[in-house]
Length: 218
Image (cartoon, rainbow, N blue to C red; front, top):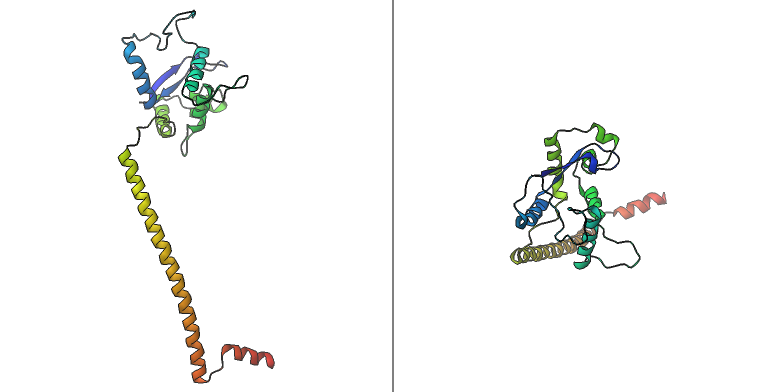
């Protein structure tokens, strides 16, 4: 893992040379669930075929069929709404854009991503063709590509809520202590001022203010 997917040049646009990309753990689990009732299959059997032939003249699902099925699924799930005569907000192509935006990590070389997406750039012409290096780069970026995570249990949520409430209590306690310290400092400054005034009065010394006025009068 991740599982490599070969991309023959005849399936790619702009006469791009043969490439490969990868299938992560989440997608692999979904694919395995999909294929389980459809086994056994031979090495060269198609994975995605029409469940009902009907008017379809091909024995495989073409890109247009995938796009239409995806649009119906997002409508059925309520992710988006039908927009009569307007472009769809969510299309199958959005998954490709999502991959393009999220396939990264700190220090990631974007030319690997361009290679996996079938883009033809100067960078992809010089990129390493070592499969294990590609697999390693994809694995490091995979944390930002995951879309399936186990649901958080109610017990875990309650624990997090309790921790947050405890932190709130600690913050409030700290705030009150700061207010108390500010008041104590203000009182202490006032008391020190009174003590100094008494000292000057008892010893008959001139105050700094008197000395300043004396200098100005000369």
